[in-house]
Length: 166
Image (cartoon, rainbow, N blue to C red; front, top):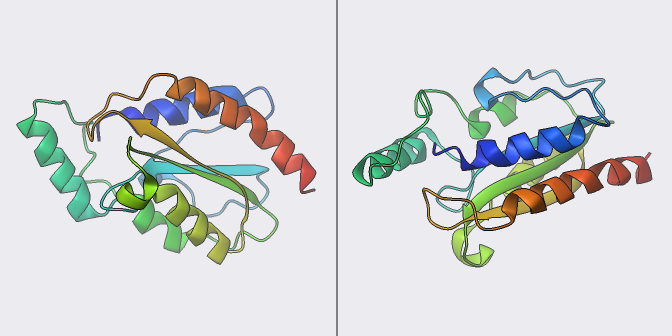
């Protein structure tokens, strides 16, 4: 919606490019057949204690407009992770990691899309090797100080998690 999660995804992708052939795609454009990949990293913003829904995306867009915060074009019309994950093929033998962005408050108060993503991935038999949250100062952002560095460090540690589970 506001670009914070995308900035984290770009930092994670940039860090992983040294080890993997990386493709960064929006959920509504992501393939559902992920057989043969080494690591699937799935991330999204936390809305209403979990993954976004069409209703929560519309509410976030309305809030952004009220606060005069630019909203990414097409963000409300496109499907999100909640719509993509049920169509994802069986993940047996595929390593995965999940991240989210959420307001800088305790997770028991904000919820965590990353935990929900990881749970859905596990239910589809993926081997989840990492889960992380990156904080934003307010619902529209910006990202907290040092969060992109934390995202890069988290991504840098993922290959060793994958190799340890081989």
